[in-house]
Length: 582
Image (cartoon, rainbow, N blue to C red; front, side, top):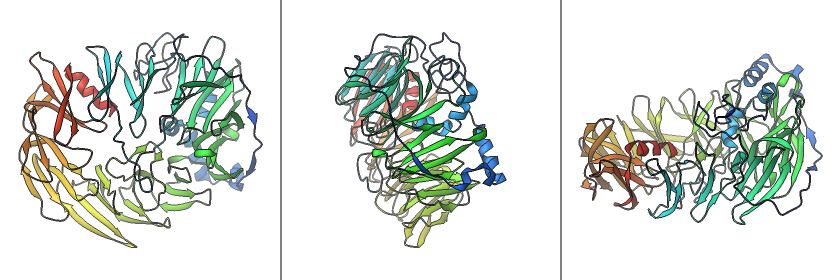
């Protein structure tokens, strides 16, 4: 058996990957959804008319392009979860030569709740999830600290980008749940691969029995499972942002299938699968399939990428490194031959910058999931490149360098104007405001080990050593406290929390918990004496406090400075492990 999470071989009878701990599927299970109540209809065939670039022909490729294609073909293989599926590793390498980038993308798209014309943000309807190994129980709360669900078992969590829904899975019994604020649904146990739309409204998965694999779509609102396809080997699932348009790759389910016998299928607006083409795999998909990005396996297992719009396929590139796509998939950012390019609405690519893309600078609580951005356009966005430069892309896609020597620990864009801050490798903080074709760049702080800011960047808290400072706009910084650690800012950006006078005990830091509002005098948090841990969950601030039984109680920030005890007698190890989910 192979693990699709880490790609390593595992023993056939193992339930859990011994390399990464991810659950493996090997046995048929009877628990799950009811069977479909509709008659199955086979996939329809779509005739494709393609407008291909001369660069598609191997003879016209430069030596540099061939080198990149060869490097791309040799990238790490990512393998599908079920045993006895995709056994031909050479075929697997051909199909998934770019799956290192795309596998996580197949789970979610980035989409959010407010101010969608600029950026999408973490929702106030987010879920908070904690697994208690001592009680063998997993709990789900809302952002008011109200307990929503309690499940037997210890589950890991995979959230939608806005954190309003999640898939829960254990590592022993292959048990899975779907959860949102109003529903807890136990999923069938014979699922081989699962994809959830960003809005949490649709699931796409296949289940396996002894005879064949069956592909399903599940509508969360209707609570209905619908059969889509059967009798094939399925993989590489993709959904549109709204979840109504889907795509997948499949091969014949027969033993000894030819190495290159794989095809792609497209499901538009909740319809039935349509044949999209052989030796193809879709890697980005807009609502209604207005823009469909796919790669095609060619001679010698080399790859060409296309965008399909208005029924026509347009050649893009033979390299898919550093892919980023905006929220409606009308803009594709990618790297080629050491530079970064942008393709807008299927037109000719624009060269942005002579370095590879590293990240996009986002606002506080701004969403992003892997390659898919939660904004409408790369216009008026700040990008970080591998040469440590900050580059601004204006409303005409013209790019200019506005900063340098950017560090990895801090970079944020204002959610109200074209202003950004970033930390340098020397732990300085630079503030840059874009003014048309020019920019105003200023040194904001000379040294900061940790930074927390409001969404509009007007209020900044930072730690320099163990001294806590507050700075409003360009006024002089005010020192608020000494011997401070663990700076956290609430989701609304108006109250900072921190520990003070910490002492070490084993692997933890215990100190009194304080809060600061709008740069005022630090005040102690009620019940915050001897806080053993302070951290950030999806939406709220959480701290742990040792009780008289030698275990710990969890307190959650519900609003303002108020904390609510949401759980008693948990282990410190579970508290530390909870950070993996957030």
